[in-house]
Length: 291
Ligand code: GLU
Image (cartoon, rainbow, N blue to C red; front, top):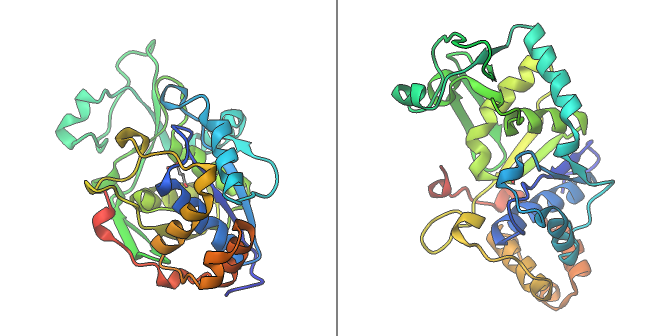
């Protein structure tokens, strides 16, 4: 176990529905990694996009975490309350020439597979604009604690990134980077579906002058059809009465040892033992679960 290094981690669910087994795996991994480093574990609800959200999920998710013994530190943060800080970051980026206003429609970007890779110009100054981050035609990589080196050419693979949409909603890419920085997050542990979002986030951090956190992406739990568990494919919500079974299954998924003592323990003791035995080096990347 690594100790005594400054560690602030977080779990940052989007409230599109209640927690299912896949999101429990990500929550548990980030909790265990934080506690094994004697760190802080924060909870942030990423409620940026009301039309995509389930109004009950913002209260149900914290309840489900507590039912599984996963108590966060400090107050819950809500991205819906952070517009002012996102605007400050957008002004900083604009003042340094990193962003531009764009009116391109999805249809106009079809020739480049939906990626924005060309210069564009405002066609109607009375119509709303999106704000995009100009990305370089350059490889951006990082070293993930499970998946190892991962890199992308930002222009070819990602294109100029939307930071604020035409309808005024802030993009996840902007919000996650600004919030992690302002919460002092040092270690990010999350699902591997976000591995391919990381290089663009690192570039944005660089533009804003933020330090780079450490990353550990957890392989995705897939259903029998090989799809990521999600609300869209009816992943079932985890329930309080199955808390111990769910935790044991999530630990097994994360390749952690489960002793007979853990099988017999209550969830508080089970989590304490899981923290003291946490070995993220045992997690195997499942590349087939990606993208
Ligand atoms: N809100 C994102 C999700 O629920 C996770 C964001 C992150 O951990 O960076 O998939």
